[in-house]
Image 1: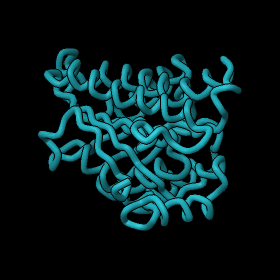
Image 2 (image 1 turned 180 degrees about the vertical axis):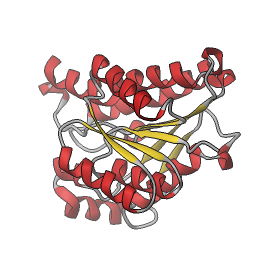
Image 3 (image 1 turned 135 degrees about the horizontal axis):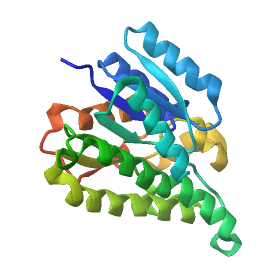
Length: 249
């Protein structure tokens, strides 16, 4: 059987990197997308190859429509159409609503919302049985901030992730009969360097102990496990779901 192909956006660090590495261990060929962090992305590729699968580093700003199209074209040329997309690229933000302007909001929504539209567009064009594809799975990265409002100064981030919850439900209705399952994950306080914008890991761990019912932060491994499950046959009747990976928060 053909080895399945997965593209993970924002895969040079944190959750995306762990999903990419776990996908490789699970038998996928993995497209490792990065925007600026070339060396970390190449290290992820090297680890996947060292563990017996294949991987390729794919540079591209997921918030840029033309760059996304070129990234998918390169993946096509390398291996053919993909089977799974993890829409992971994104950013945190910290600014009060009273400080918001077009540049700040545009940056957040390009990274967190437009990127997922652009990548889903290219994935559906290739996966859809309506277009001659063989189906597939799309997993969008939301956040528990979509329903909690996030941390202080995080209104733009929370709003962008709320948009992803709605996008996931709408896309699931749009492509469910075309062989494509669409779901989302809402991670909570996960121990990654992305939290530096809100005071760093020590601050996050203090918050996790106080606010998370499990009394701790989550790991990238725990999030990656859910992502891979959502792409597997074990979740074949899970569609249009938004799954919290938040320790009960």
